Length: 310
Ligand code: SF4
Ligand code: SF4
Ligand code: SF4
Image (cartoon, rainbow, N blue to C red):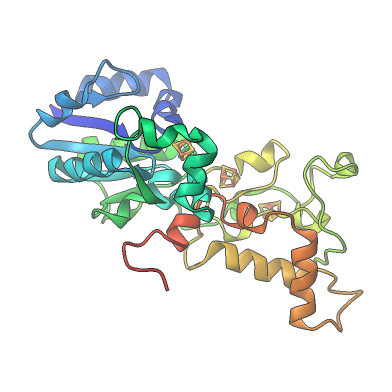
């Protein structure tokens, strides 16, 4: 029987709990075909139990690396795993906790623990790393299952291939499409944004649920984001925030959408503006651009490498 371990770092555990979104019969079949040797979220698993394991066929690691403990656990996971999976966007790109990389570590610790930090350090508080990083910053990753959390269909398909021994070549396990490809909203050929609208703003009730968000002035990252989620946010009348990470062939998800929005903003009424002036408008109209464009990927693009930053 194949052995599986599921463990994590800086994680909300939404990714491994997403396994329970599998239909009951699939879950039953899965658990009857594998032996789960460690799963700290759902079993009374202690770290010593993991350390005592020899080779494990599949280790699914959720969450990024924020503390020394996370790093050591990940390195052990790599040593034991025949196949190591980055489960979810935190493990793959750093995820939402990676936004903390905008701030110096000392300032974060002081904000959270106040003056108690020095006193508690090394006792009750894990030793933090300078920056949160995706797991690929430390070890070689065999497969990435992006998403916050990954779509249940992707998890199901991956586990099927794993059990049957028919996994594809290593890399991102996902669709070669964008969220826009999966979105049913009407997208006009020619879009011009007169004003960027914020979610919940006073004119939010005027948003037409059948028409593309971008065409209505609402920032949506569907065009630059990998598909596979069946546009689940858009179907709930919420724009895509990019949790599946960059779409195939897009190197920088945030920069690409920023440039697209800049080109649509005031296309008609201010077509004589220079690039600098357009970017000024973008800056003025978009509150928290980093949180909007790099919500799930900041450490992947900035500060995720072990090399010195430029
Ligand atoms: S990717 Fe999302 S669901 Fe998964 S651990 Fe991170 S925040 Fe939680
Ligand atoms: S930009 Fe968003 S709303 Fe528009 S088509 Fe793409 S996914 Fe749908
Ligand atoms: S619509 Fe966007 S943010 Fe929502 S699940 Fe899909 S990729 Fe993630």
